[in-house]
Image (tube, rainbow over all chains, first blue to last red; front, side, top):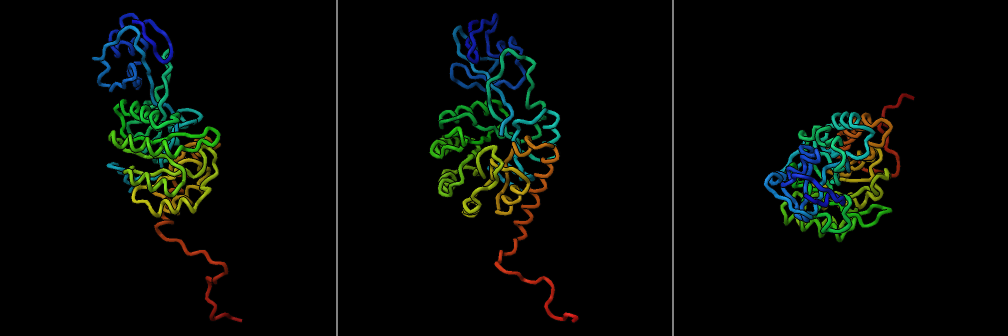
Length: 66
Length: 254
């Protein structure tokens, strides 16, 4: 699956869903929040949401801040 | 008791989580401060580093109410997007609206802050706007229905304390929602002054994380909150130009 993630072109084999993608990036269960083609996904939707070639993905999380 | 929207807190100290020397010091500082509300920022993950620390785990964040900010936003629309990203974590519905209009002073853009607050209220967020210490702006934010007003004491990270105590006290006096003094705090004295003015709480970060001993400073801030609040409730004496003796003037043995 060819994806554009956080400004990087990546080819993740077998990443059919958002959850697959996070597993492949080893970022599952690390508090990742995902925006797919400018649509923000609830965490509960990660497993069902399917990816397509060329999808634009933003993966964010909480960091320290005031 | 501090009530913000449907939330209730014993502590009146809100603590930011930026720029601590390390996670261990941060956790100790957070623990000793007895804060119940922690602020965070939302940023891109490093997708090439599976070992990056999970901030929430390190802080045992489940014990706290999370108050993510929209820092980095320059427009209302950007702030709304960041707020929605934060909410999609499923961990919080509170948001600190922070729309910066100038990158030298980091002062908030009042027009965009007002706009973002209105949009986020419509989306059902618990909205706490970080705002300048403008009395009329604070009133307009309250009229929109925000759940607390967070006027800055002075520019973010400046440590200058409350540079306009008159405005701050006018904001506090007119408000019917909690007023939380946010940004610019430098020392426990600044916190005590804010609380003596009648603020409902104080949000600070750099004053603790940048202190020589952050853990000790976190404790000092907790005590300053308590001292200032007690002082406010007790009602201070009026200031006078000349002396009034505290010892009796009668019965002198001369």
